Length: 433
Image (tube, rainbow, N blue to C red; front, side, top):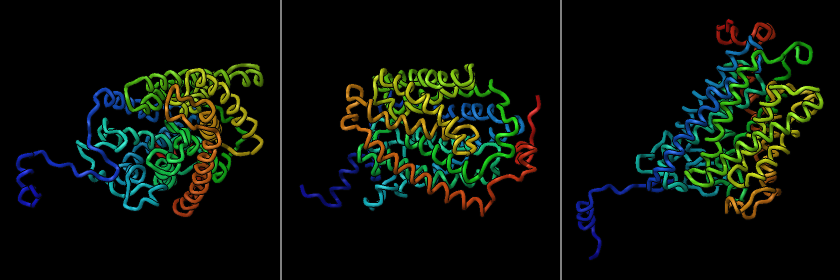
């Protein structure tokens, strides 16, 4: 029978279920309950990394007069990025517009305000997961990335400047890089491996942190006044929450409740432990004593380094990645920082920038098809090319954003405000006890 408008209407009447009109980035949902539960749990774990994990980790390392201001930065980043992600960030990262050429560098605008996302849609590469779950899982990654940068300029940036910086950075730096690697962009197409955010999260935020440290300059009294952490117990609790949350970060990036999630979880824990060993040995040699701060910093270094590799290497490779990266980050956060005279307050660049860079390069060496078939063709040269693109984009655009902030809000608090502390001068609050 030849199709006509009349026969189409008869078919529609006989089949009352609506035909799903899918956007270019979508597939029809074929629910995988086990995978959905695992990613739901992982989403909660990744959110835990920022609030309260990173907030406490950073908050304990600043001076007491800046504790609340440091906590506020993690809270504000969570609030602002969550809203921007729904308005346009998700669309720029994972949407696909009509122009295939420019879609290699930036997503489209089809999914702004989650237009077209529904109960029966899935992201095209993940038909087993509801698209709403993919949106919120990726949102937690977008939240923590600018929050990490705050460690580089802790104790001296105006809160108004911080809000403007985070908003612009999310849209102009994070979303494009996320699209390049995970959203169908050119880095993913050329085979750059980044399982859970070595380039997208850590190198991206670490390079931005270094630029911020140079542009804002050193804290008042840096190298002269006592700037020791005021509460290492907070920092230890924060690091522990980061460790637990990182299971969702890396294990959840398998996007299924399977063997890949299992090995990614094991690799995450192992690399954290060997990262701590790799940090504490040179610290013990230099300082003659091992410190709690050194152990937990090394633990985070291992977590950072394994992030791009977690689903591509076996446990032996994971242990080596942590062990190799630990001492490199120790040198970057001590001798190199001192030689280059920049004040990366909480070592955002030394830990996340350098750790992410080393981990991403080592992914090209240790990745094995026995763990993940996507590791075929992996090599350090391909990884390096991808990292160069991220470093250049993040560095240049971060600098331009800082210049916009400088002329719109100003970047630094005044000398008097810095001496008094950001808790009282930026938020009108103080921490007692």
